[in-house]
Length: 349
Ligand SMILES: Nc1ncnc2c1ncn2[C@@H]1O[C@H](COP(=O)(O)OP(=O)(O)O)[C@@H](O)[C@H]1O
Ligand SMILES: [Mg+2]
Image (tube, rainbow, N blue to C red; front, top):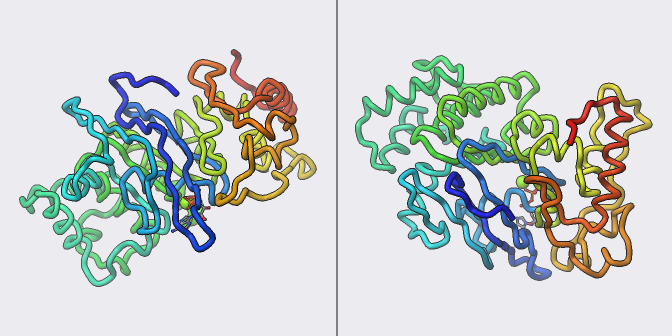
């Protein structure tokens, strides 16, 4: 994986996470590594159950009781340049880290606001829990952020959650999430529960906030067009592993992993006829007893004998573009062909 340089804010190194289930240990995240740079936006893509949420809950150490981080390091660099391993932080330090340094905004935000307290009380409580006791200051900053996310500041500040629409509540959480000026914002399917116009607004305000505040983003979405729009870098996860990671244009126009190619081909495009639509055959593997070799091999049209036996290492095949696939050259050839077939211009190189 990319070596740490000094503009790396979060370096996830060889992290594995498992859950204890009735049938045994679920290996939800397996030896994942990546670097998140200052101001960078990283999208995580992959089918449901591939470990995206688990990875991010691990980063902020909010896994359910049955979950365990088995190995690895989560190195976080503070503004003053000091680097800490998140896994070494005390509970108190962890609480400060969660809102002040690394904020996470969950999917289905609609239910994460307490219905019986006003927005302003929630804001004050949260701020106070993080040592911000000057209410006038907190209020001024919050109103400014509400304005930035295109909410009527005074009205929303004094409202109960039920007086706000789903999209408004999502924006309240976004604004609250960045109140303490975090360096990293994690968004887990932030637009899943909302209609398409609300989705548009949320993406636009997120871009505005990022522009103004300069935080880095880890963005989880099952919608590839949103990932393409929001991300500088995209990582494909399969069965708990990052199987491909690279610059957004590389990954979307020149994918080198058969699974990424499969995901892209499962997306309907305006120009493609229905007959060109294909989905990936088979279903995601059992994470208690995953397949040998490359975990994707049972579903992969490119798989050879070697893939059934040996797990492919993640290799940098183009600048910043890493892939774990023995047959990546063949996949790339087909990717380029498919891209041209769809009439999409792909970047040269
Ligand atoms: N609390 C849990 N107990 C046991 N297994 C879990 C738990 N939460 C998630 N899993 C399993 O871990 C894997 C990864 O899940 P998750 O991180 O939610 O994936 P994603 O966010 O990509 O949909 C899945 O196989 C899922 O069934
Ligand atoms: Mg999830």
